[in-house]
Image 1 (cartoon, rainbow, N blue to C red):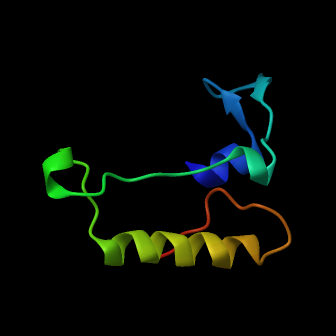
Image 2 (cartoon, rainbow, N blue to C red):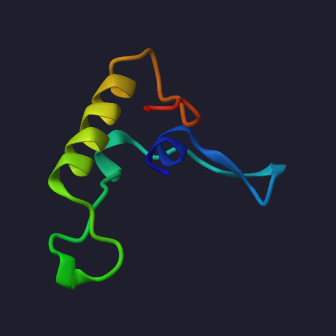
Length: 70
């Protein structure tokens, strides 16, 4: 999702209606910080893996929304 926000995307698959790309300083991501926060809890290792992935993508020449990180 973060990559899509950085690259922009067609709305409902329609290339005539595009959600414009956001600047890097307009995008953030978050995750619940404890198991009591609900079913979306991500352990610290998972959050670190996501950050590492975003750093690898940021090192490329422009955002790539469909680049797998696994």
